[in-house]
Length: 239
Image (cartoon, rainbow, N blue to C red; front, side, top):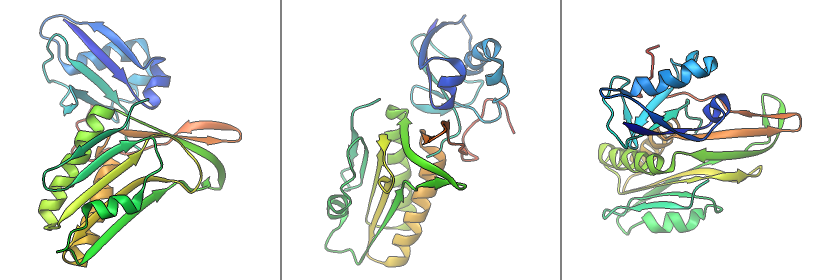
């Protein structure tokens, strides 16, 4: 069988590629994809406890069976080149990946209804330093097809759990300058407590479950920012 393999974030540097075609025998499982590249790139083998696998845009356990034509992505821990992606639910929830500056006021107006008594908006912005080291800019990339679906899953789940009205999540991709918003989570609700709680849970889940990675640029170099998967994300090797 032939499998399409995708690499993201730090793993692009480790394996020296963004994608590949891999021939595997019948009965192959997702772990076999990781093992193939871990043999070729020993540094990857040492990352097994932090790498997550996805098949056809869904997280999968390492022993998940593969089929001819599957797409398997090797994903480093999330740290929070594609056109804009967007999902608009019938309930009014709104999710977007964009390379444009985020229009926060337009997004707020989009989710606010006459029955709402509160709207809470979280902005994640690019700061000018990391541990005292001056930051020049950030670059964000993501596994777009999977990221937009995960954002929608998270938004719908917290809307139901916290009994709020509408939820919007927007994430920037590409190059961002200091002070620009990289991610926005907006929750409209009849009551303020639910809106605050849902917004906090939304950004926390987004940072741990949505496959987005950032590279930080300094005057003397650049680095992929370390992230952390949610406990529910299935690693190649258990911690």
